[in-house]
Amino acid sequence: MAETLQLIKGSREGRYKVLLPQISALIADEPDLIANCANIVAALRQTFGFFWIGFYFVNDKDNCLVLGPFQGDIACTRIGFGKGVCGTAWQRAETILVPDVEQFEGHIACSSASKSEIVVPILFNGNVRCVLDIDSDQLDDFTEIDKQYLEVMATNFAYLFSNG
Ligand code: SME
Image (tube, rainbow, N blue to C red; front, side, top):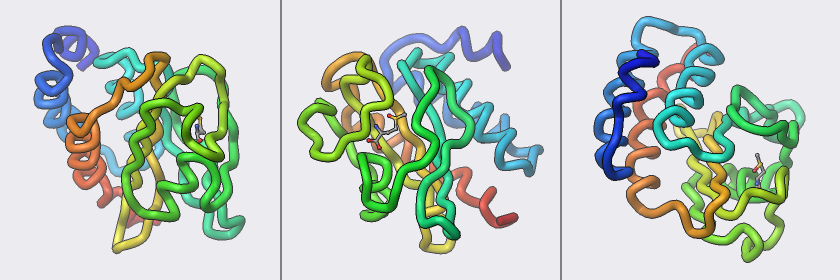
């Protein structure tokens, strides 16, 4: 798998087209949510080299998001409902593209190196169960292409939440 991922080159869309089936295959035989999320962020990091990629899981008891598997610098562990880009994506149950984090009111800066961001919620049975947060150190680094493919990826692995 690691060797295969290193071979993914070309446009960002081309890379998603190769990567998504690989991620589906990677998680197909493994039911453990954390193990699969860990490999997904590693695969995204290997393919695109983004500055920070990670999952935040909904914690119903405390009504907040809690940090899950990630690749990158240490990050905030808890984010409240409706707070920051992640908490807002959870509240709206929709993807948020942020071309310039300084222009997003309430953005939570875990690192000053982060310049743009995309947050994709993952829903199971109509409820947001986690969000995938990707940060770039480049301004305006995410487009509708990222949204489109990351949402497909999110849909493809949402079944993992059936185990709780
Ligand atoms: N920027 C996020 C916080 C998480 S870090 O980027 C890893 C937000 O505003 O919710």
